[in-house]
Length: 230
Figure (cartoon, rainbow, N blue to C red):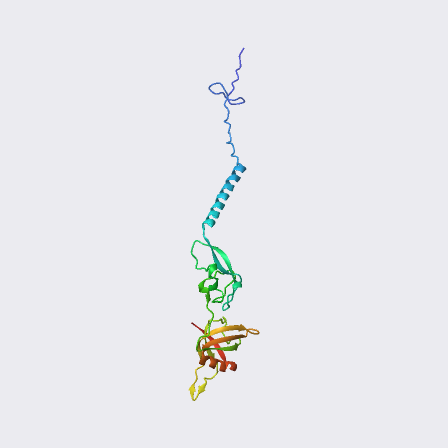
């Protein structure tokens, strides 16, 4: 009787055996553990940084020397006289020395005239005020009621220096000689008062002779003010 032998090829239907008699296994991938963010520790770190930054700012402010200074409590326009009610004392902190006026120097600004428009809060210095115009010996003051166009558009304030000019179509003559149209040169604005509308009453201080000439021509309506350098 013949015997039939059936052969089987490894790998078909059964796991292959290793050299040590055990079957092969695929490697298992293990993921690394995730880092957990600890919110309390993060909040504490932020808090510490903020506290140190705030402390540095407060230390800087406390290390800067503060000194009292004079400032305006309200706005003052150019040419206006500063009164005691216009001034208040403020504390100024700065690393640099400022040319401000202290509270003991109040008399150096009260009664003086503003050289420029000064808004409220402006620190007062010697450079923004001047002495009021005073009438000297041999001087005279004449008043002019002028409409817009007869004085400069940028305005006129006490202390400004002006020429008073007679605006005429033809040169004026006297005994056949042409008369100078400039009635007064380098006159000083003594005072300014607002009238109705934009009309202004401007008082001019000049020598007695020039002031009399200005007053004589004031009613002609031809006078103009020319703002000139001091």
